[in-house]
Image 1 (cartoon, protein in one colour):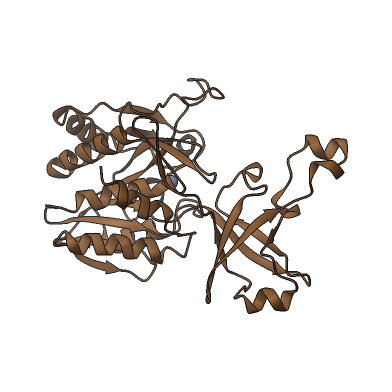
Image 2 (cartoon, rainbow, N blue to C red):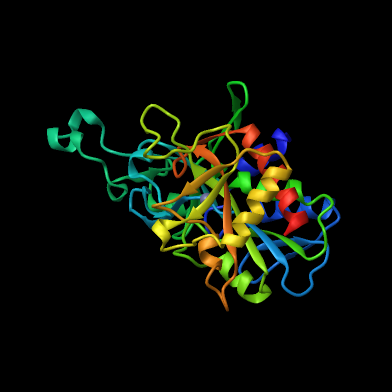
Length: 342
Ligand SMILES: [Zn+2]
């Protein structure tokens, strides 16, 4: 396991639509593995040895959830919108970094302290709309002088570290784990297979980067490489989320209660076969909420057989995630076998 690479990917900032830093890491890795690379009009990064008609595409979204500056008040405090599905409770008093033309500006999300909350306020969830970012500015002018503008992307400076025996902990593991897996598949990639870091998945309702690229490239099949919701902790029961860390990649047969992708049966069989031949355990997932890039691709053109393979991850869509090293390694092995047989 290349911890340094995963750390670099996890700590890179790539709030949806601003994935350039992640795309650069992926493009660099693809090139070093002897692939041609390309960044398309939408910000997707592609790596391939050669492309013919109807390639196989493996897509991993590069973007992460975050915030965006929407207003600078006269005292220099910033109001923000959420980019992607973030639970407001996870935002209170977090450290943030704001990406500006003058560089990174550190700050912290402020809110009313409990001492002066009314009883009912203390019991209810604080909405992000009543939070603000404090960057230590003395005025709006001061904030602007530091580089702050409306539309700046805001992310969380969570450091990556290893935990317990084989766990990985960091921000944006959803989906830098997928980006990492694609980079590890680059070595020895066969012809007519495209590895693709996709843009704006966290802010898509079945569309954006994976869709625009797949429309153009007309793949014979599309495999989304992403993370899945792990349910193996004290606040979730197996019937809420049956997936667990360390038990192998999760094969998603149904996404968003079947409003999203319903995995193509033949493709799913091919994946199960590949798992068997590579001796990789798998977990099967039917997703009620949530979807992956597979849902953005499956009903394009005349229909594109699509499926998602996820690494079970705890606490996704917050400022931190926890995943298991074995699942990452199993996914690489499974996808290598799948690429060779599909
Ligand atoms: Zn994801």
